[in-house]
Structures are given as C-alpha cells and as structure tokens.
Image 1 (cartoon, one colour):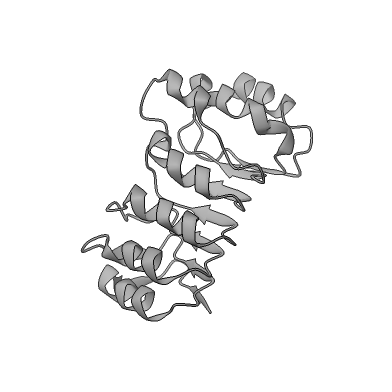
Image 2: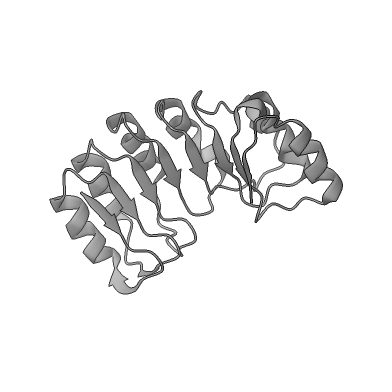
Length: 181
C-alpha cells in the first residue's frame, strides 16, 4: 500500500494515527511539504509498532516536530526493506541508533547539525547510503561526509550553508555523483 500526500493540507496527526494503526502493509508514506496539523507524535509510534513493510518514509519539509528518535530507530529495526527516509530537521547525533539499524537505507535527507561537536566524526552511516541531503551543513561538518563520499550518487545541498569553495571541495570527494541539487 502506498499513501502519497504531496504538498497537501487539511489533515492532522490524528488521521495519520488512524492510518498507521490500521495499515499494516504500508510500503510508502509520503508527506513531503504537506501542512499537517500536529497534535502529538503518536502516529509515528503506531507506524513503528504496526508496520514491517515500510520502504519509504518521507515527512521532509513539514512542520512535524514531535518526532521520537526511538520510534525512528524502531522503524529501522522492524522494517528491513527501508531504503528511503526523509525527515524534518533534527540533530543528527540523535539518529545514531537509527543509522545503526537502517541497514538497507540508500537515501537519507533531513537532520541538521546543532552542536559543534567532535562526535560527528564518529557517526556511522549505513553502508548502502548513496543519496544524501543534510540541512544546514556548514564547512565544519563537511568532513563527516568524506568517508562515504565516493559512494554518493545524489547529493542535495539546497539547504547547506556552504560557499563556492566549500562546494568545490566537497564535490571533489564525490567522483560517482550523478545528481547534484
């Protein structure tokens, strides 16, 4: 089952809760740029405990803020076919467990760097990750991409905080890049 609500409005997380509770074979949940009335984050928890078939989860560029990192981690644990996740801005370091369990993940967008931390260097991304979009990435965070930059086929720098020189340095690390946004 596929539910794609691209740039939609007029629904709330209560509706998502019902869908995530009832649809146990949901393969795609796509809400990108939709205006969702957020009442709580229970919908994501229901998705995490009721679904093992999810392949694509996308609530990128929404105002959903009540996102539990434990629920994202549980989705990654239970949904072995999860290949694409695009989420709202949240601290990348809060996603360490998610990345550890998302073994089939090929695409990730969202997340941000709120801390000036050396811990970013120890962050391990899934081995199959080849499409990436990191929000608000600056010069200081670029080195976290270097260890797997040669695997990248798509790189979204739309919301990165990089100057021309930074772009050039980063792109030199990505010899297999096919798509640059």
